[in-house]
Structure formats: structure tokens, C-alpha cells
Image (cartoon, rainbow, N blue to C red; front, side):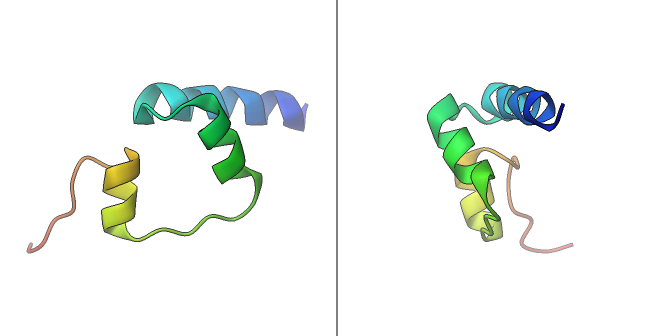
Length: 52
């Protein structure tokens, strides 16, 4: 069951980030911390807000 959820999550991340499935699988295999700028480059967020 966990493997099915993981596979589903990886495909969702693939479709939203534009990363290939192998990259997603590697990056979600273990804890993966990134800065806001790295998250934007990866495709997880649209942009980094500099000021409120």
C-alpha cells in the first residue's frame, strides 16, 4: 500500500514540476531539503517572495 501511494505521489510531482520520474524517485527516496530558490528551480513553487 505504501509503495502504491509513493508511486502515485511521484507521478503527481512529475506532472506538477516537469522533472523526470527517475529524478523524482531519487529525490523522494530519502529526506531532501532545499532552499526556496532551489524549490523554485525544481518546480515545486512558482516564485520566491522577497518582501511582504
